Picture 1 (cartoon, rainbow, N blue to C red):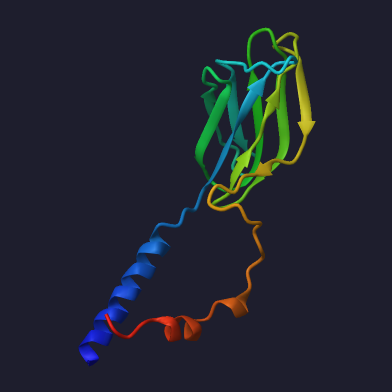
Picture 2: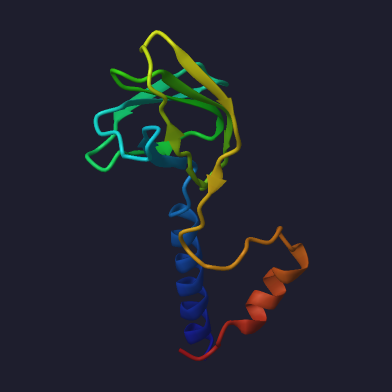
Length: 155
């Protein structure tokens, strides 16, 4: 009887460790680049600039005008987009948190590439894992003793 309990506990610990290791330490930013008529802009250069570290990463929109930065370190960002025939657009004050998936859509205005449009805006975080609203951490809702009591002792 005691060895079965030990096996169950070890299996439970293994599952918890696996889940903890699967957690990400980065976030994602994606969006669509459009022109004044709302049409998608394919081939637009998009740059995510981490204001805290001074590092930037660039990508190009696909045929649907979509760009994706799937794995960025958390921190404050500035997203810029440009394409020939349009003014450069810059979105400031984007705060990326660990594990967040933020959507930042960018509208390009007609004009010269030497001109730019600066926008201060907040990004929208997209919850892709559930349809419910996120709630703040509730320490009382999670405790080891509650978890331990819920572990079945028969395998």
